[in-house]
Amino acid sequence: MGININQSAYYFFLCLEFVLFKRTFCVDEIITYLENKYNIFLFKETILKYIRTLKTLGFEFERVNNKMYKLKEVPFKITAGINEEKIILEIIEALRNYHVSNSGYDKYNFLEKLQFFLPKDLKKIFNRRLILLNYLEHKNNYMLKNIKKYCKDAQRLNITYLKDGKIKQKDLVEPADIFFTKKSIYLKCFDLNQKTNILINFDWILEIVQTPLKNKYLFKKQFVTLKFSSKFAKAYTLKEGEEIIKKGLGELYVRSFYYDKTLFFKNILRYMESCEIVSPENLRKDFQKYVKDLYQIYYCYE
Image (cartoon, rainbow, N blue to C red; front, side, top):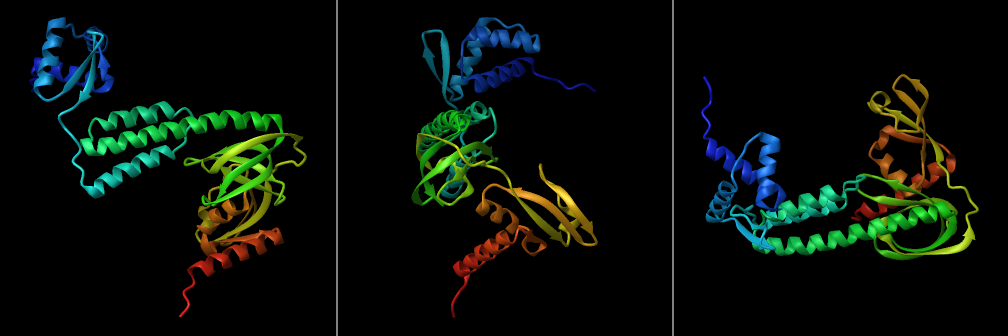
């Protein structure tokens, strides 16, 4: 038994789909779209009738150059209480922090579509955030382009940045490369004050001044031997660049590496007692101090 479809309603909803997707359009574009994608041939008068119906339903349009239509408002909104508003704004922040190659257009295209369905009060906050996000995105793109050049030039940088997101710090560093994660972009560099490799989050960077001095130290991986036990002895997945040294009953020895010591410590903490730094000895001692410092933060004196 076939399904009965109201042809006029079907065409109307195809038109609505196009309007919501495109948002700025002319009647001829809708006609061409329906012909090319669905092999549906409609007159201009029919499309204009659909637009008048949308206006009656509460859709608001603005005319541009007496030819184009620009969708301004839709009649259905996301109803959001205080807690929901907070969640929506947190989603925007999460998107701002998500870095994937060539994802900038898709990210902001989605955010612009989202704003149509927000209540007016929340839309004002949303638009302010969107302006800020665009600024930060352009800042990161500008910085990315320049830092790529600095790494290629292999000249030392005077860099001012926020240490742990709070304390302003100025360092002389030798830039090496750019490091991407899903949430952030980092500058890999050798810190001449600390005489060690560090990663600096792009969001923390306040100022960069290139010096005429050429890089002297080679930024390279710092190798470490890790021992995994319990379930991770069987379930641990090697990361790119890692290799198994020895595998025994309930134990797995892995040759790993790190660039930034603190970031490395944070990563291995998630394995808790199932992961041990075997060597080098100085890194074991540094990790002991790191854990003791954490303990002091959370220790409650009676």
